Image 1 (tube, rainbow, N blue to C red):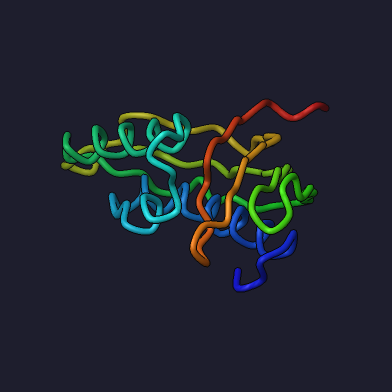
Image 2 (cartoon, rainbow, N blue to C red):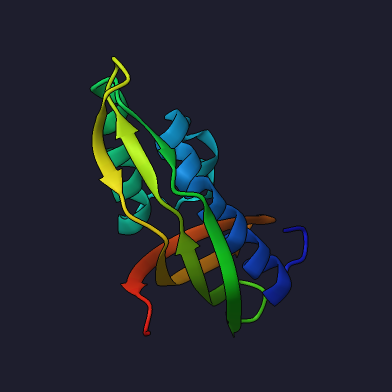
Length: 136
């Protein structure tokens, strides 16, 4: 992620998506928020959903993600990048505070994830994101 070009943007996007199951599994949103632009609707929805889950005393296990391919385009040299990732999410479960399963997440599922990433003051920030079902 130290690279200020396309490789760094892909690394930032990959790291960002690796945090997705982590925030639901642990409730720790520190790194997710650090990489999220305040106006990123996708980023904010993950924060809201994870906070609501953990406020109820619930947590998630599983849903490990893996990236099968990535493609990035530098839109504004050294500043703005579009990153597309093909992502597979594994199965998981949501548990209540007593350890009972309250929801099952089927998997594996594949998604096409589109992220707009900016480089600002030496840091990567996810400006917006969109998740679509992958084409079969």
